[in-house]
Image 1 (cartoon, one colour):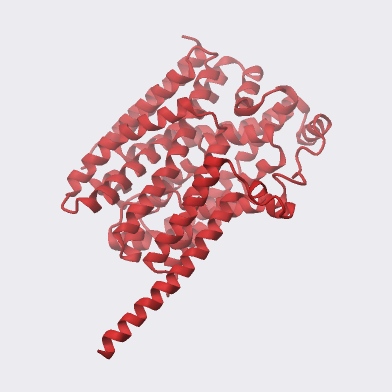
Image 2 (cartoon, one colour):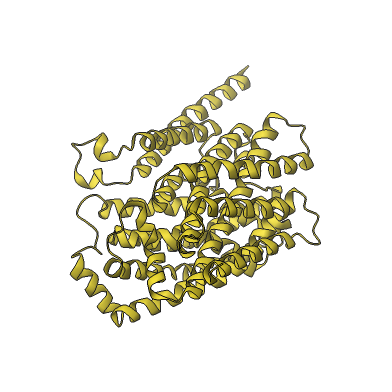
Length: 491
């Protein structure tokens, strides 16, 4: 076994053991398994939420898009900062309501706010459909990282299976406790690696940041600016809006807010986490450097930019450290995704149809669903070919359709009815589904529109349709309800 592979699997085994041991001394009931008994302090909540910032989409996808797309890749910095800015108000509201009503899943919030179990079923299904591409993203990245940094000693398929089995085991045993303790090691490593690469690589190859940008400009003029069409200014702005709204709508992130001790913990993290997220700038710099020194990567191979450059820059032992950090960026978000998806299906879908089910039966079913969901994700990982960022944006387009009904539910006087919320979500998901299957864009659907309109992210159009339908149906059903009440009073 080469030193690189030894280091990678050493960290994998360590993460697995840490995840398993995290359950010690805890009665792993439904509340402990899903939200940690609502007892996480500032540091643990920060680590848990930071686990969602640095996934494989950041580690490989950001550098890959910096390498292959250029300027538009900067959207990641914008939406993360905006997302955490809004979380200052949103997460405390979620925590307060969730604690008051003992909620454990994202769908529980909608069920309670709208007094509609069927809305909870819909939210659960949408959440799981959005999470599957996100989980595929993690496993795809894991396969790339382990296979590439092991210099081909482990195939991507074998790496995917090993990672999926490891994360399934500790999720079933320890739930959110396993995720947060594994995230401690992961966040320390990834912060150090991202900071070091961002500083060292430009200096090593170019002598500084300005010479790096000048070298990229010489090889690809205007590559680091937004193009006039395609992924231009309107695409950038609409994508930032879409992903900012979706930032706090992922079921695993939403549920993490329930785990905090108090609302102040979440507000403190809203200040700290954008600074941590800014470390992804270092990953962008690696992608820019690879443009000059690792030319020729096309399509899905763009995701290899960071790893290829690292392998030709550093000794094998440090490549192992980078590979281990990347491995953990897949395991931690992957564990949260598996746990959240299984909880949604068991708590909000199964229990809706079997209301007599006890909490013990629900958690048993959730644990059974974990390996099933992992197998589904492995299948799509091994048969799909999308780039990492493309998978991420597809998931965002879906999960963001839950945002309008959520945001209006925070209003003191919510005008949206449960019928309106259901109709809006269905309409938005239908548009996302159609455009995903047909690969349609606004430009292909409406070729006569101005370029600035054609370049809009099609997920935003789905969101607009969602809002229009939600508003119209809410007004109609509210009026009908009012008339019905008036007739009953008159009678």
